[in-house]
Image 1: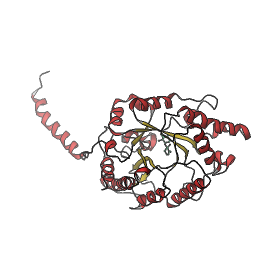
Image 2: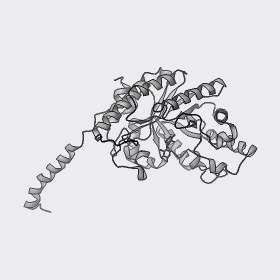
Image 3: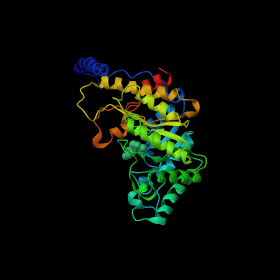
Image 4: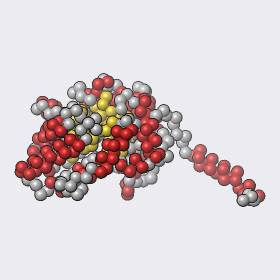
Length: 354
Ligand code: XIL
């Protein structure tokens, strides 16, 4: 079609407008792939459907060498059809993808306070014990030789740090008892995997961090085969400077490997009116993420287990799912097009000690 005079005149105007909008967007930072600059394996959460997304696969191949199933290796998915019909279709697919891509696999998670209550509801006594031990033996046994490590127990501590969570597992075995039992069963099922205790907000809620460290001390004292500490690191932009690094140093005192296991940093602040611009929030986010990366990079090499983000692109984030999505949050290292966010630059700076 021959462009008319009107079209020819309109074209430069349209281009100028595009350029104006384009220039309104900050230029993505120029950041190298994260895998080669991370001091330890750099990982991401994965959902099975992402294996069918070539853009996600390309971004993962360039930036990560380790994967954590975001939800399809959890009890809620595996036991969705009941204890007697475990469902491994998607966790098997993720494990096969990791193996095919030469990526390590971090198992997540065997025992969690927030899952399994329904599946175990009809059980008590020895039947409960058989199901508890059997679940761990079956799942950890299935992925023996395929996983590098496990989050054996996830989030055992109350959000305010005042103590341990009550749950269906602690009701049967006691607060420390279910954790000890889970680790012993996982050790028996997979003697090679590195076994982690995983928790969140240890840095942002000091009482919770203190309770976490006390729990670790108690478990090690009774000979629990606890071999690594998971710091989920779902960061907030308003954590006081220095607090993240201080907790990392405290956690490192046990001499165990540390896994930054689920890093994201929402720009949202739930508890107050916040008139800061997106740019001001991103500046605060970059400072906190760089502090975390710097603190991790400062650990002794033997304690740098892995550094995992809880998704690659903003739109992969659990913060951008469903009604929680404000359409503006940038909690992850890459934008929805796979271009580096300021967070990626902050990670690179932190890993480099800046
Ligand atoms: C979240 C996933 O990101 C969501 O997709 C899922 O619906 C719920 O679980 N701590 C954890 C993770 O250990 O398993 C959680 O992942 C986020 C908080």
